[in-house]
Length: 144
Image 1 (tube, rainbow, N blue to C red):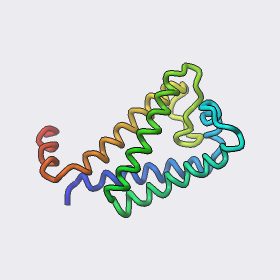
Image 2 (spheres, one colour):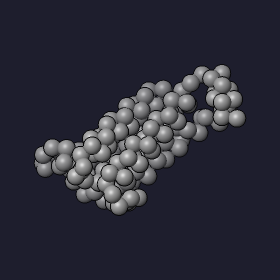
Image 3 (cartoon, rainbow, N blue to C red):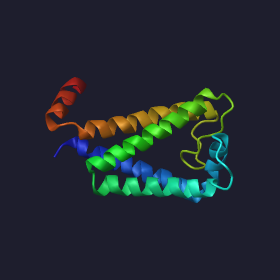
Image 4 (cartoon, rainbow, N blue to C red):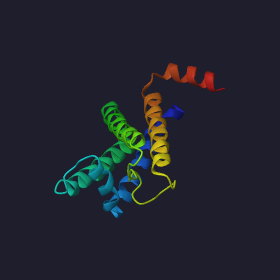
């Protein structure tokens, strides 16, 4: 068993925590969804959908670790990274609401930049996990 098999579990736990924090404080996503132009009538549905998808993918990553789940999660994280990029470029953009009301930075731009880095790290973990076992040895030799 490769040590890289833990990577989808780590990403899955992150998604579960993130979804739980959003479920506890769903209004934390309202500013960013409004900023992106979503109508107020659609926002509650979008928040429910987002939390549900994160929960489902998180559970599936922990339990299944299938190629399809990894690809779906990578796609979702890339989409979130694109939104964070938009927020970063908009100098007056709101907080992303990535972790509900938990704020790691005072600046919304710093939060968006951190989110981009975090998402790229999570995507990298999923990509490394999907590589053939012989490439894991190459990764180990580079890191050694």
